Image 1: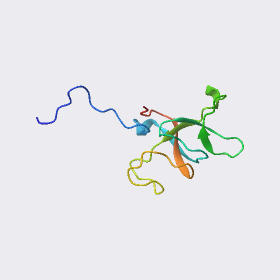
Image 2 (image 1 turned 180 degrees about the horizontal axis):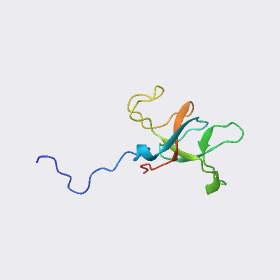
Image 3 (image 1 turned 90 degrees about the vertical axis):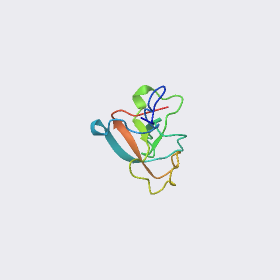
Length: 101
């Protein structure tokens, strides 16, 4: 046995859906730059786009979590890029479980 985990196994990548069979994921246009995947966002009522939460937003305004493109690579992102694009279509987790940082 040459492979050994001394402390614990890795549990996932931020923005990755951990239980895909029990989740609801929708595609939405993004209207702002997210700094990472796995962050909460809301639907902007003026534009209809998925944007970051503002300081004055409450828990009731949360729409979902930004999901990273996996197992397929997004056609807009560069290979292996870990930051979301500021525009275009991104996946949003509405119901389910996600790995966050």
